[in-house]
Length: 561
Picture 1 (cartoon, rainbow, N blue to C red):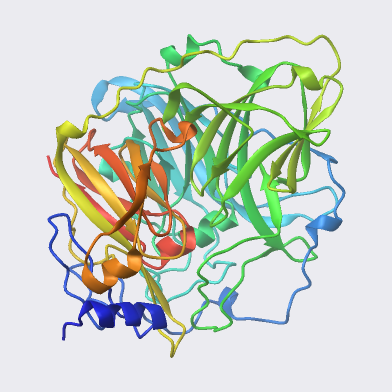
Picture 2 (picture 1 turned 180 degrees about the vertical axis):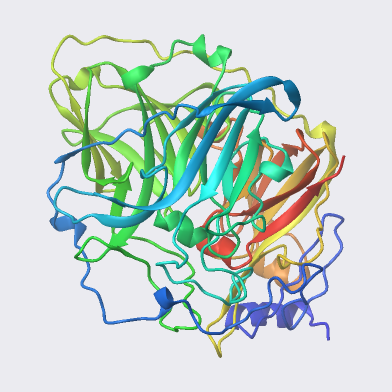
């Protein structure tokens, strides 16, 4: 049965069971509506919902009294700065066996960390025993090999939902697959969600690093449980450097500070709490917002800084939380300059007092602490205090903000060979409260529908039909944001007409560089222009609200050589 658009709109508005909204494909054709989720694809039923016995961690026990972070003393713990990891040796380069490249052997293991002086040790999962994991620092064009080893326990300590795509009871609860977010890598080293391995397993990934200097990061990407593995602590920074960046004379050493932001909930004994739906056999929740906001794994840390210009490398590693970041001194904002975004330096600094950072986005900042000599400056998320900078007394040493950074050539729309219109969708079953979240109304296991040619340029129009902001991330590539355009979503669902509202808005200056993650706002069409360069093969694009991605807001795409 095919429903007309009025029925589809009513189904969407009143949450009829699993209606599939009509949407337009890249060629403008209307996708036929369905009254049930599409059948599993050639993956052999990978994503068939299977509700069965839950993992032990998902069975609700007696309520655990929560920790109240607001009651903790502020600024009593120094900010930990993740160490730059030293290679374990050299191995032959897979692309040039006559040459040797650095090799790392990094273990994922259960550890205990202290998130605050007055909180007992917390059980977490880590890379190399620290939260965040060690920083991997590389040079552009110089390859790297990493053997990622899963040395985790056999049982998960967070609530695995066996009804989610790829997390069925026939698969081990503990599985890992590591993604270096933003890396231009061959497909076999990308951390594809289905390329997971259990305890005792490992994967050897090759990172050629053929890309500009940028703030990247690594995290778990195993299908169905990425949200839990990252929540448990599997994350770290990956910095690419190059000669051009070196020539700018940006702050370095102790004046270059990595800041990994993430939120959590803890019980009174300092152990992680992750909420569930209350249904033991279906514990998935649609989003997570914790009341404890950590910086580099600490609550309310402080950092002593010189009264000079500093470079802050910021990663939003939260599952769902968006940050509105600002700096305050004596109640007044402290100016910042954004000099880089996800995929490297901007063409010119963007001065501002505050900015939004979505899950997985990065920001590269310059801050002059000179005017605050002998005082303190606090990093805030809205009104919530995150980190105190204690500015030392002494003579202020000023450094100019570079007027120009990395020249950026806009990708010309005249080079585009295909424009795709891709919807962001959400459905709810009122009988079970079950929810499904899809990209272009298509489930994970269906056949690949986006197959760009290697080195071709496409425009992707992300049409957000939901009420949420979705940070959409494309693996392998970097892209530029063209604009965001309001439209009448109801009219689109009723008649198929794309009635635009107002003028398209260009990206904010701090979004104007190379990106790999973009905020798709509700009721908006977000246009990005992408060159699919680097490698042929299968990759993924997905929402980086991890709870959304776990519930099928993720799709493969295939770059065709």
